[in-house]
Image 1 (tube, rainbow, N blue to C red):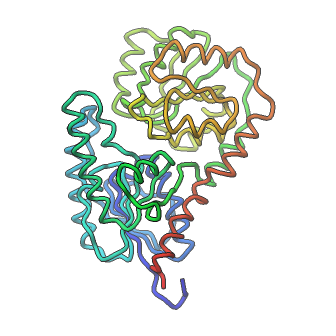
Image 2 (tube, rainbow, N blue to C red; image 1 turned 30 degrees about the vertical axis):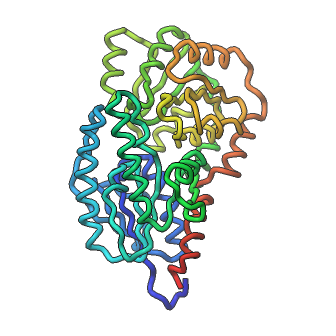
Image 3 (cartoon, rainbow, N blue to C red; image 1 turned 60 degrees about the vertical axis):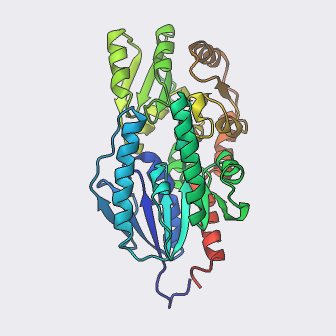
Length: 384
């Protein structure tokens, strides 16, 4: 971009608050790369949290809306619908050269309208595909899939976070491959440098199994608590918050589970000491969420710790590249207990932690994958 030309502007519409760590992790590298290339950014979002970016070329338009965190899909859907209405009402008043609409709120797709600017849809989660319970839910899923297929047509490009989502966009949504941008989930350079430098703290009496992340229906951490009751020689650390946190805390209290410790939501630097004392890092996604890859897995692998993942689908393909990682069936207490016991009783494979860290550095640094977005923008001759 020529120094004599005015800076091009990118408007970002974020369906979820920047208070959500996964949203911060997705947007921060994309914006940092764009700022380095000479773009200006405006983010339309709810809440008062800002990204950890200090630049006069980044501004915010705040929307007053508390997104419902109820476990009911329909309650959350109504709240997301109302928020999306407010977001696009505010966004319509902003002139920009490109508009970047990021999910996982499906209503940021459904309520988007075509503008004269370059339009990019960022698919971070195929949330409508998770409806698979009752017949009513299946009918709703098909209806939402049809709407999504029609609305995606208004976007010039569609970005996604993994190959499963890319395949879905091409096969189910009939998006031309040339319009699809793969911006892989991963970890930022700054976070990677801190996590990969964590040393192992062997000065403790008990093995520690740690979970870090959202505590919701998809994670079903009740399974982890049931495993803890059978593994009294192990301490379980749970970091995070979400719709199921209170239920889990009540379960621990009511069933007198003495080896589970809740830390609540912590910032990144506060989590580092917990990673340091951890031996095994655990994550789970129930089978209905097989197209998703928890971004937390990349953080886990950057520490060099052993990982147990209970899940299916795309995440298992990603994990197949790494060593000393055990993949088990989701929502299965027996498999989880057996996996933990096997890891406790099996010596660590020398050099495996360094190999895993090396794979993350080579393939899953977010700033590197974000470059593909600006390659497509350049093809559009936005900055000509």
